[in-house]
Length: 135
View 1 (tube, rainbow, N blue to C red):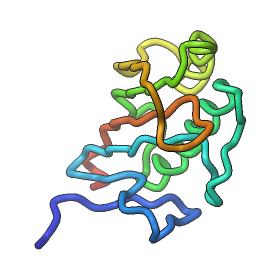
View 2: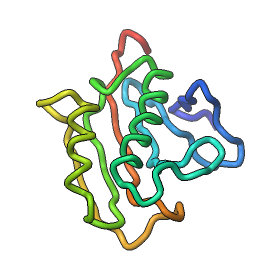
View 3: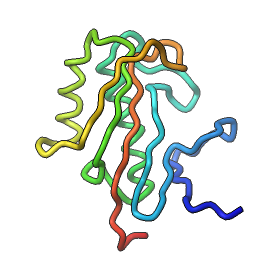
View 4: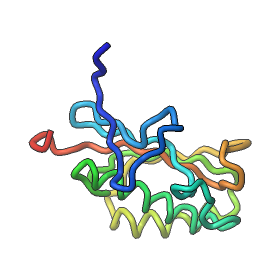
């Protein structure tokens, strides 16, 4: 069966053990999978520090966006899943730095009872619109 999308893999590669793609391009839309602050070896970056975890998640997203020929100016929506609201307000400074000021992407924040990655305080997914000329 032919799929209507293609996977976008960052330059550092992607483990075959995962049953999802880090990013999926369908037409000029790029869907970035929910990410926690785990590195390529599965080590959690910034244990207990929601700001550092948020920074690292956006670093990972930046690599996937670049692999698709895009950057954070292409992001139109994010969804943030928070384990706790402690430190939540501090993640705003990270978003301001990443997205460069108004207008910001549409956003949804959800407090959840748990995340799959042990120690993760936040998971973020995003949608970007790509330049159709690069398709």
